[in-house]
Image 1 (spheres, rainbow, N blue to C red):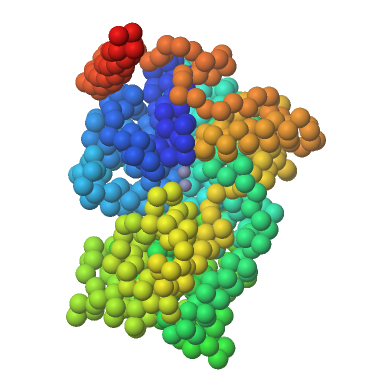
Image 2 (cartoon, rainbow, N blue to C red):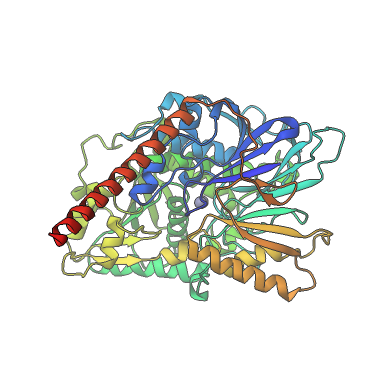
Amino acid sequence: MFMKFIGAAEGVTGSCTWLYHPASDTQLLVDCGLYQGTDHEVWLNHQPFEFDPKKIKYLLLTHAHIDHCGLIGKLVREGFKGKVYCTNATARVAEEMLLDGAGFSDSEYTKEDVRRIQWSPIDYSASEIAEQRRDFKWGKIFTLAPGLTLSPWRSSHVLGACGFSINWNDQGDKSTYADRSIFFSGDIGCQSSQNCYLPMMKKNHAPPPYTDFLVMESTYGSRVREDQYKSSENRIRALEQVIIDTKERGGTLVIPTFAFHRTQEILTDLFTIGLRWRNSCKGDLQCYLESPLSNRLNKVYGEELPRLLSSTRPQNLDRQYLRDDLTETTGIHPKNIGNLFDNLSNGKVATSGKLKVTPSDGGDKGNTQPRKKKTVTPMEILKEFDVVVVSGGMCDQGTITRYLSIVENKPRNTLLLTGYQAAGSKGRQLLESETEDVACTIEDLSSYYSGHADQAILLDYLFELSGRKEQDNSCHVFINHGESESKNVLREAIQHRAAEKRPNDRIVSEVSIGLKKWFDLSNSTYIDNSPVLTEPTVNDLTRELLELKSMLATQSREMIAIRELLEHLTKEEA
Ligand SMILES: [Zn+2]
Ligand SMILES: [Zn+2]
């Protein structure tokens, strides 16, 4: 088996790893994500794939964030006809995200390409609920090819997220036990067994106890989150305080947020606050949701969260995603949370205690027109509502762009950021600029909401085998999905913990940083030449031409420099 990191190797985004199992002649990918951030990263999205999409048999998709799924449309457009293995929730969310992305002017694929994706949900699909896949449980083995299998393991990162264990033998013989294994973590959530504090996702996630290789993300590999941010109660109180302060000033709180998962987390916290206010003297809380994509995703939350609570559910799917103590921490009955999201996605008001959330549109019905008959302007919305949740987590795109100038100008208003603000984004500028330019209050609660594990949780995730079978093999760890500093600091931290040799820890023999180079997993060594035999494709030729062009450009720059130097020397001599 051979592996090459394609994306998320030199940064955080563009997650994609290419695997080749020669014994069964199977090529597969783990994730196929969009590069985001700098101009160079965006440029990478428009370059030819390094592999031939027609030769890829499977794509294993860990979750539906765009940096993991965003290039699937392009992959299909360029000839990929294989199955996409992922959870049902991931398939449905990713499809909506990709359809939304097809609308951008620089998109490399169309909505038609997205509709041709062959989703293959590992837990169930609409027609198969509790039938063929009734026996699904995390860790279940699926056969991909002779001597090549896969098994999914849950992650607490976002709805539908999982990691994948790929097992193989080098003979490609079905009867032979797949005796080698590599695990891909995908993004690692922060809901640990010690502390489960984010609004919805359940804890308990870990890689399989046995694995020869383990690829793990390192987004926050160099950070340790302060305890104050790892608390449901602190987060809900902080949000409540921002609402109260803004209401007292007679203003409106505007929350621009990411459509997938962060919006649903914010809504869950708002539902909680509404319930807490039920028996208080505090007035009603009127909230407006104007985010067509997130309202389409609310449909998925409305179905996925309660479906698994029905009396006919397979026992082992019990609350597959939903945290078990939801009622204790939020006051919301697990059965009701689905109804709240479902109402919104059907264009209905969702009521929770004193909170009323009015959606701007009919969500999955594709009706993106304001639900009120007359056209409503942002000005009117701000007058009528206490809280407005809009799309555009970094304030550059989405419905926030309609509101921003109006919100900014009034000191009574508050703009609340709840997610990562990339360098150069409008959100980052707002956080860093002096308040003279902007009249409204800017608040930042992103430290409470981050869905990535910090260093301490990453280490526990990797090492802890508590209660599970004692391992009999050691593990080689590859680090990806992080800035250089995060990767280096995490590598040192892993080496340090491995050297402690704690009695119940996984044995880690080696820690490497994932390189964009072929690695022979069967012989544990990097190789120089590609093990995949391919005839040159149009993509290869295009890439070679591009390389040639840049070589010529470099050479001509050097020639000019030499000529200038010669002229300079000649002048000096003269
Ligand atoms: Zn993610
Ligand atoms: Zn990611």
